[in-house]
Image (cartoon, rainbow, N blue to C red; front, side, top):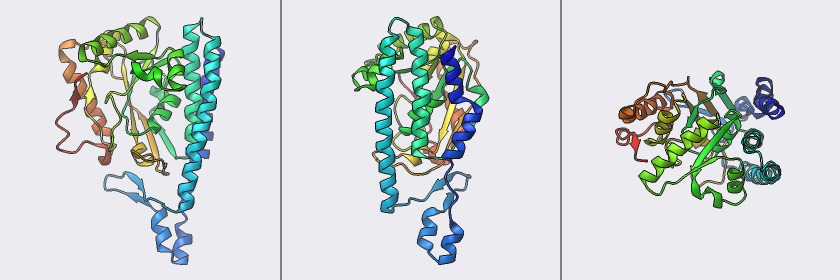
Length: 318
């Protein structure tokens, strides 16, 4: 009960408002730069709005901006190392109590994820939060390391993640992942993957948990939505849990592939209404995958939609 109260506090509306005020970027000082005639600075700080209303930011490549970004990333690494060590000790103490470790893993995620986003300073808008406490299969598009922080922060208490079995070899984080009773799957071949998905479904039903999964199966290099794997549908068929899509926009602009710099692009997390799966049938798996993929296409900006040549293939093999 105490863990639930603390977790609710970390994800509560009034605390959200407080962090939103802290995280909100200052307005561009356009009048100041226009008055001094410094058009180069004006261009750097002006928001760029595309035809579909998507807000992007022009790069500010001044050395001080780059230095601040590096300091923020270093601060994130140090902070995450500290919180991971602390919660690893907590998990070891709670070794005889598996469900308490799940809840502590969520508390770690809520605290660490929110702290990471506060340090990085990107403005964040959250929509559809009324769907964020449903026991469900939460799915999320993946285009940036920031997606991990956001998912850690915003998924409900009583949730477990799913990752490849090799995650146990990731220093510190991998061991904490296992201690928190998150789930691992064997992706060595399609048959092994499907069998792993069945075990995942059995585990979340038996333990009354929610699940977090990235249906693309990997991170998009360009930010554009990739085809979906079928795993989340297999789990839905077995568990009959609803699916709650989380649509993340802007993260691909804020932290780009192979970059060590975080830009001040605005981020948005939108929870879509739960999709009921109680009457889904195995013979229609491809149809369900396409339907959910199409939902993402409807809510993503143009810069995150697949190119025309990529859009025909929306399903990846498990």
